[in-house]
Length: 132
Image 1 (cartoon, rainbow, N blue to C red):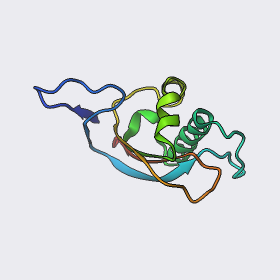
Image 2: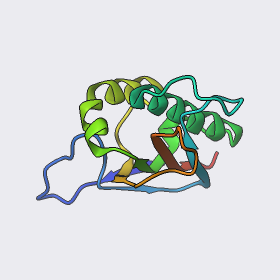
Image 3: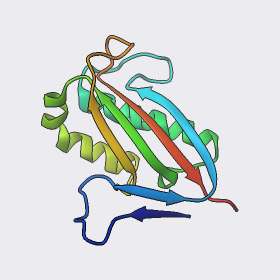
């Protein structure tokens, strides 16, 4: 069970939820970057790396028996805020196609660099899989 949290006097945020309450098995997914299963970058493009990082989050989540609908929290680390904002439309499309919905508490921060030099984004996630 998952419920988004929105105080009554607040406007609904666009592209994320302010909070999420959930009951079930918690799954904590380490920061995923935009490389493939063989740890190879197929693109230097931020939107393409974001799509791959999201696919990586989903692949790890599936190992716990979860689906994207079970995601409750994401933290995005990007190396270039301007590139992120300029790529917002493509990133949004990738998010909708891979994850599906925005009822996830999310934060995004710009960082100086990521450990892998070619990485432009890293996404940490938490999911809660409902109890059967």
